[in-house]
Image 1 (cartoon, rainbow, N blue to C red):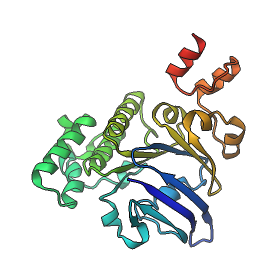
Image 2 (image 1 turned 180 degrees about the vertical axis):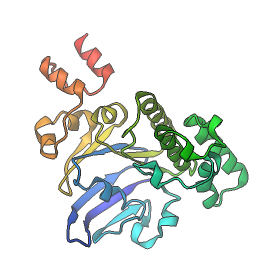
Image 3 (image 1 turned 90 degrees about the horizontal axis):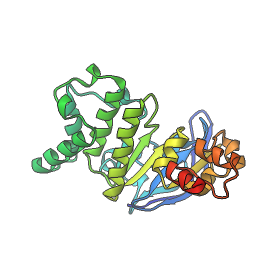
Length: 264
């Protein structure tokens, strides 16, 4: 499902203009990472996709729906949003109830709800925690509960806000597996992240924001190789990209497989 953003501007009540004329199109099935320093406008931008924020001017369309003409509840059937802090998202007495809430709220048939919940809990390895209160779990597992609760809604667009923050290597691998599966299913996956190495390994397109404007937009390899421009928004290229430049590699490398091929 396509996302179409036209001359999007947003000013907070304080007078801060957080977005200054954003024009973007994100096609159905794309995997997109949005990077930039704190205050660049990343979260402000994606919160327009599910109607949590409404444009001061300009427009955002999800498919044929312009977001200003639909409620957050209705947009939730098209855009799933995993918050950075799972504690802002979780409220149910046990994991199974939490993961079931979204699809039930979308009024799916019981058989479909059961199927979606089973799939989501399997992807996030939560099967043995179904009866556990989410707040009895570690922060890393609460993150997986938040993830599963959105996956179970089966939305065509899924947004992850800083998915790897505070996560150990094992959980980062789980999250990467979930993203790969969503990609295989043809979902549009968008992430806000400061984890550039995770970005390079898992996303095909990178959008760099600075001061509410698009600084760079294109294939991950091209954008992440623009070291001087990225520096304007205090983003460093991936470690392998920097190492490749030190070694004098002709091509920009962002992933381990690319690096090994380039030096072989």
